[in-house]
Every structure is written in C-alpha cells, then in structure tokens.
Length: 114
Image (cartoon, rainbow, N blue to C red; front, side):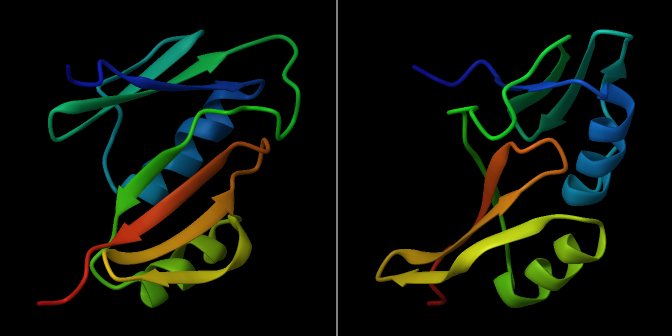
C-alpha cells in the first residue's frame, strides 16, 4: 500500500506554503484558502488550514530526500527552520530533524554514499 498523502495542520496557510515552497523547491499543485498540496514524485504533501493548532503536537512526520545534508541544513535554517538536535548517522544514511514556523516536525534523509 502506498502513501496517499501526508498532511500538516497550519493556522497561517500562506506562510506555510511559502516556507515549504522554499524547502521543497517547487510550487504547489494548488493553493486554496483551506488546503494546499505539493506533488513530490508520486507522493502528495498537503497543508491544511485549521483554526486552532497545538504547536508542536503534530505526530505526522515527513522526511525530504537530501543529497548533501550539511548544505541543506544551512539552506533550511536560512528560511527559518529550527534544527532539532544534531545529524544522526546510521549505516543506512544520515538524518536531521527540524521544526517549521508552526511547530510541525520534519526531517531530511541522505542515503549512504556508495
């Protein structure tokens, strides 16, 4: 079974769309007043406008692919992403976690170099 989409709640949808356009590097498929959606290869990443959100209480997690995680960390910090902890290095790749401006947690994943 494939993932249909991953969704994050957001109070300020326009700000969240602007932030994730920079993170992902693409325009959304569409951006309505209550929902915006990005297509990343065969997956969908959505942002849903909500009236009340519990900052940082979202359990959803999305990892974006990275070719050079150290460079991407600097790039994400330049548009307001907060780095959580340090880079985790495993036999199957490198991981870094971030917090977006509304408290949602997301990550980067760099596969091992062969």
